[in-house]
Image (cartoon, rainbow, N blue to C red; front, side):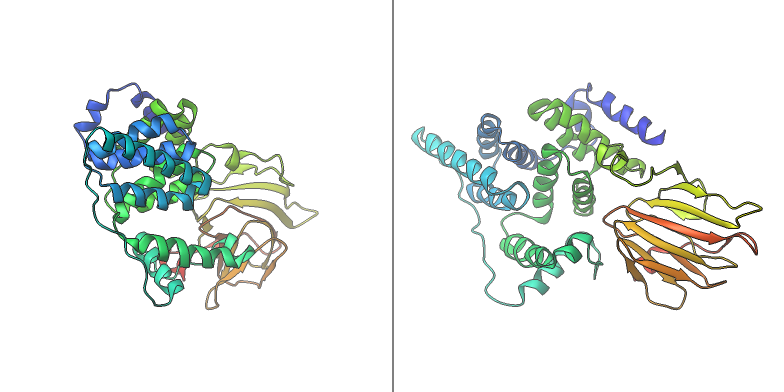
Length: 371
């Protein structure tokens, strides 16, 4: 319900004039142009892009800042979109030169001269997110080389070129991901990063309004849902999150137990009774969701069905669980389990009720979760 209210408020805000935002806080003219250029590049809308490029140059964007943005965007929108945008920039610059308009060239980019690019990229990512030694994402375990490419090329080769600030790069990234659609988890992550570097909620909504009015109304509305989910702390009600069609078991009912951090759902396959003392439930954790510390008088067995999950017994290292993994928790042993930070985790929990119910303990802190 909370998410729906936020979404309604954001949809209503679409009808308000942009001057309302200016009473709060707008992107600067150059930042807004960066967002427009990014959105048009991401969707291949060359007509809008041409207008955005001219506007950006008039607003004070240097030629090299625009060039650097289009280099940056190839990592998020692909070479074809980036190259088409660069060709459009070439045409715009030639037309402006013929008209006698002299645009500022601006700061030149710098290339890495040496050093361990993986470690450089790792530090850049830590500077961007404020998180040191992030756990490896699921994609990095499935295809390890992609994580190397991200660190060495995107976060080292590209982000360290200068010209654009981290804030400007994140504005471009957020605008691109929201404009393309279908990338809610990535868009949400980059919105959070952008806010760490000074972008405000009204400014994010300004980008969303631009997408809705200039790029695609449907995509703009989807972007509003992504922002509403971030503000409300609940997952966006998108097909990628709520569609159970390819799952073995439906996700069931949302867990209202106060001993959970984040959102989780349970589908009881077997309920303990007088004949069978075992409870069997499918539990679905959203990214980052987890239980509090707890223990079972007769222990517990956890079977991983999909995604990436964490399991930890007190005093022991955290265990990463993937599809097919099994965790066998001993009797009266404090432990917790839940999803990793980047993807949903689905498990089956088998719990004996012979000697009594679950005993709940304290919350798993963010520090404990990230250890």
